[in-house]
Image (cartoon, rainbow, N blue to C red):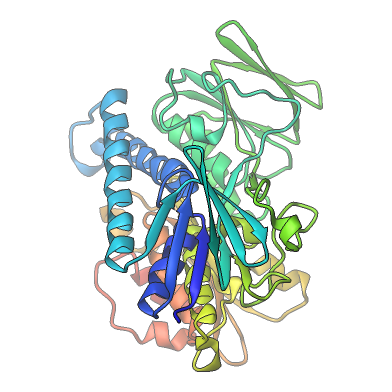
Length: 453
């Protein structure tokens, strides 16, 4: 009899696990209460990047004179932007559901919870069904974190999911949170012409990133007219008519037409019956997993945001693939474990930011000997042709062996260019492997070879 594999959650982790396990011969049931493709993916990631792309196009029109063109002033069409977002989401969702169907995956719409170690209950439209399972994957994602000192109204006090686009487009906005999501919102709304204030609880935006990387982004924000409130922690957000007031712990007050909370997320593990089934959660509500993504119950797996690992769609998808392989016994043959330290990530600001592997500050903190080489894009012909010489490429390698350990890129198309360094890190390539690659000229990728010299 085929392995009965039940997946709760149809986001990147769930749908990848479903299609891969089905190809390997499992009998797969996928349960999703919101949207196949993932609420976080289709309601957060894709819409935000769509809006950022539109904002980037508007910013480009303001730089046209530097490329020998008459400068234009583009105006935002909110209805057209909304239609574009909906079209992209619809296309992607149809693509995912089509792939699942083609692999014979059984898709159920409804809320799921475990009612025993090997039983999953699905409730939909008032009816309840219990599905037996040999293996269960919990991939239910996360939701925006909302503190007790703020009550979002979806109109002017916003969570991240209220912004694609907001019901009333902001003339001014205060962004609370200076992590990845927060700085992307700053970039997006400033590109659309809003007056933006960023509340930064520490002394640098992107506190977990390389200080040199953060400095480039801060300089760009200041050139755009973004107001940075450093060392300030928001303690209250209230509406006063059509104005939003953000109060900080140091007494500073910011008034704007809108405010958006970008202070992280919480795992969607409540109401799943996990504790009753015997699945252990950590203090944050995340499911504790091992390197195979197994919980303390070896037949119950977790992937994506609920696993407490890197909250990236790429990581979730790879976790889903690895879970499918483990469920079907492929770990007994050639099977590479997922190494979270080698996951590439990107921030879609302008300029873009991307990194992978060992960070310079991390190496110094560990007392590890490294070789750091850095090349500015201003020395690259293609960057000058693009009229965008901002940023740099930094590569970190082992001084004894030349093996590439990590890297950071700030600049145009950084999210694409980091793939070269990510491949080098994953495959244990040496800097000479990059240097001796015959790359295109002129291209931004030439900076990679120069930084590897």
